[in-house]
Image 1: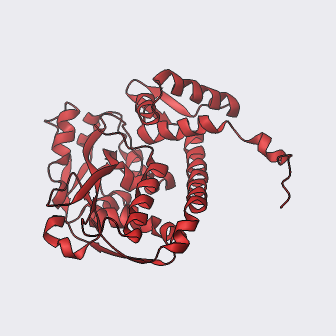
Image 2: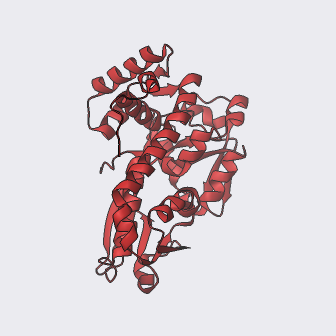
Amino acid sequence: MTIDPHPPANLDKLPPLNALRSFQAVARRGSFAGAAADLHVTHWAVGKQIKLLEDWFGVPLFERRARGAVLTDDGAVLLNDVSIAFERLASGTARLRQEPVARRVAGIVRVNVLASFALSWLLPRLADFETLHSEIEVRVSTTSRKLRYIADAFDVGVRSGHEEGVGLVSRAFLADVRLPACSPALLRQHPVQSAADLRHHTLLHSASTRTAWSQWLRKACVHDLRPARHVELDHAYLQQAAAVEGLGVTLASLPLIARDLAAGRLVCPIKEPAWRAPDYTLVINPDRQSNDAVVAFARWITARATADHGPFVPV
């Protein structure tokens, strides 16, 4: 095998990659401070990286506001390209590191998750796992029941918050940060610059998130806000779909709407306060925790969460 010691000329045209990582973190969190916490660096260091990137492109990528940072139009275009590039890079490196394991491991993994997590997060990424581990069959089921009641029916589970039970192995792996989100078209009709502006909008709820808005509004110091309407749907994924269709504003889990944000189907008009809901937790059936296929899936889903949303930071 011959390796060319001279890099392709177009590599010289790449922007500083570490700055791109900071850029993606600020865009994801909507603030320099939040990005600094995710990256385990100082607020000043993140600001320096963003300034470096803006100087490199010659255009502003964020609007600096008192309560955070909002992407400019140029920044939104760049975020879409950067997210796609990082996703491909994460996928490729994971494949290279795990290929020897993937060839050896075979079996069945029964994964039980919340319906909203399955539709918005797991299923869009599952092809990546199947590429890495083609001999492992993943069987996905959905329910919101406590996993200790269905111990014989799952190997790996994903729940919101810590799951307790005899022998259950449970660990948080993905932070659930929530912000108001709506379609760009709805925002053009009634702009939202502060939490108080939500009085002009319909607030979307679901059966499993009835108290979420009231908790967020208290945190935003507008607990007495009266919106134009309240609309409740059966499931959180219907709540998210209704927001995409412009039916109202949802209090969205940022990991679950990441693809909608990147595609421009949803926007988060205000970045603070970001409400930290119970983290998404990975639960392993104690009878299956040493199974190679189960271990491979648990490692993959944890690595994928880190690649897509940054390192998990407990609170």
